[in-house]
Length: 539
Image (tube, rainbow, N blue to C red; front, side, top):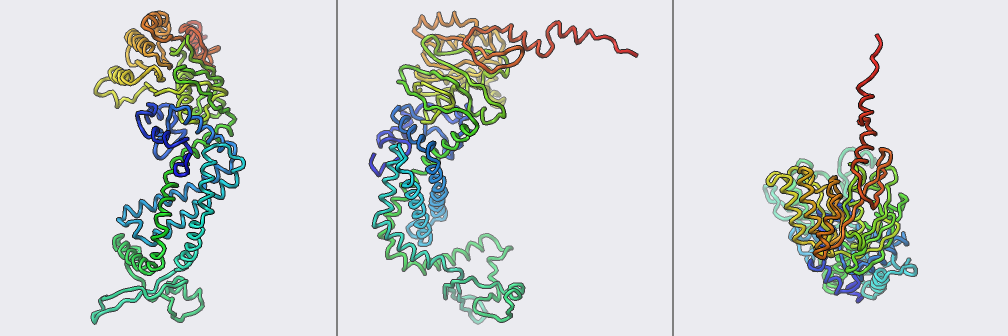
């Protein structure tokens, strides 16, 4: 990769350009990220959608980048220290723009930005060079070379020397002596800065005089404050006075800065632009690194997924768990094994309420989405193919169903998915069509499942409709006749009335679920008789 296009996320400029083209990005919306819980796990200021990729080379490049961060805490610390500096530079740029001041015209802003730039370069160059011998990823090696060369360059060293001299004069200014000419009526006619002082003026209040043990006035003692800086003055009046002083200081330092600004201005702006463009990437890898540390500190495994071609539609997970749930509960979350293969690209998942159906459904989506970000995933092992999109159909709030009704709203959203889904997509449906009766829901669900099977995508349909699971053989017969993939069933386990949260590839037995739940709560016939035929209480 050329130095001008150093990136932590993209192996080359062509990959970066492809990554900015929506047509080349997987169809994974912010809403999908929210429904899976990924937005809570990785809260980024700009959202996640621009970081997804289906390009295996990009995924592998990111895996190496993030592996360095996982192995080298000092590297994570360096990025953590440089982020607030770069944020200050960005904020300074915004402040210039918001106040209508051109960054090239403001000398005080210029000095501050150059100071921040020097801090950023020194922080990165020093931190990266300290671990370069241990770094293995192309991204951090390229960034280290770029920052080391920049920090050692004659131009940068000259900039630091000149900046140190100028900054010492700017920062030693603690107060300004102002002169004001008055007319015969004591009205100001002229005002200007008379001197810059290395010490602040004294307030002139009695307490200050007592503390100094001197009641003599001197040149640095205030005898009457300027009212625009008083607490009761309007913000506009205070800003007017502040602007006047800022303008005067700009004039004072103009001659000092102007002589060398033209030489270093473009140089600094070019390099700060490079660092600012890198800021979102630094934020992203830092957030990922922090999330991985939270999971490993909690004792959960993470694995680097083994990539297979998209056409294979591979997904073979061992010890898969939901990282969002894992970080929210005190007890250990249950892990499961799950495989999509030629005998089942789509699963109908049934089981008791709150038995783990939604948890595992989201876990599958999270594993696929984290792979598309280049991350390690929440599992003991995972062999997986990239997807061109992840589509979810989860329960919506009541406010979304006013116009169409609940069933109509559900069907409208399912139609939207069919307009975009392909054979290389993943679909995740959780309790879809629960707004209507079991007979109608089972019929529509069977049509939908057959449709997804004919499309050839992979995914999970989590449902309370045990009749739908029973209809899988007929659905397979219809779908396979049209060249579709096969469907199989999963069941959320329950043992002796307790939800085990283990997911098994098996045929569901709705009666056993109902019987176990009924017995648990004492609502079997024997349990009810025991409740209703009690011995009368004695007098």
